[in-house]
Image 1 (cartoon, rainbow, N blue to C red):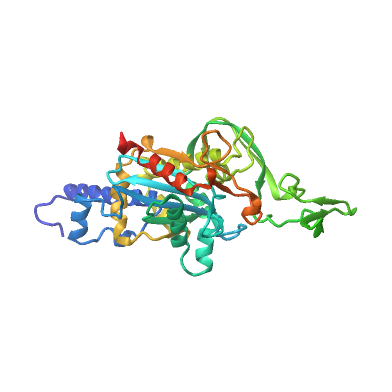
Image 2 (image 1 turned 90 degrees about the horizontal axis):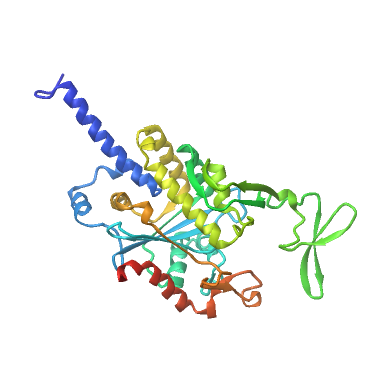
Length: 377
């Protein structure tokens, strides 16, 4: 029976408007890798008031700091090691966003290990991977880290395919002849692998069928079957999930694209391209795509953001202009770099990055200065 005073046409119009509004809000949440639809839209009056009057999120000096982690996940070597680490510092009004790319090889004194192992350490010791990773970043930059979430690369790849790919501007063409093939990380490629001690130094040796031996090093790696060659041409490139994943993970590209600086810049490009695609009208008008994204993120995400905080992130994300996002890359090798390669003998024989003059205080002040730069002008 039709309600009194409301025509079927008017009723349908109201339903469409409400439906579109709910759909738009949900997509914004998916864009920052969050969900929980049924809990999101049925909050009490206090939530509505806070949404209108404040950001509703933890903050310090007017900024919300979020740590973004990308891990290989099951099926990859070192499944809980953070292959991607980005600190997003967001002004409470959404007017300024700074992305700080953190190199995986950055040494953390309190861990006596690289920063990419922080999440894995926390998971192994049941103290929480996110909490350990946040604490490590706080220690290095002397900044409070209010929230964190991580996504595994399998979910990243699938999500990009679900929005039918992203458009990424490739600034520099490159070829990477050593991109790792998933599942072949330990393939011996027909060699017999042994360990030999020469002059007191332990070496990994690969022997072929004739008995000829090769000492395995980073520069002299005989296990060619573990790798494939990938390439990207300069210009605007439409990438599916697999191509986007290779684009952000490549470590041995030509034209200086194997550096941490170049790799971090590529990661930020793809993240912003994905955000733009999720917020596009094409995705907004596809409920099935949104639901599939929700399922993907639900299986691939670990976060300490609470249900009641989700609407505030949605509100904040709508204010952000991707064209104004500032990018900071921490690397070594350039004159302006703030990091240098550390002495292996002081870091368990590993390749690591440390601040110049080993001054973590200077590194923290540099990062803080970049984040708060606009507020000083």
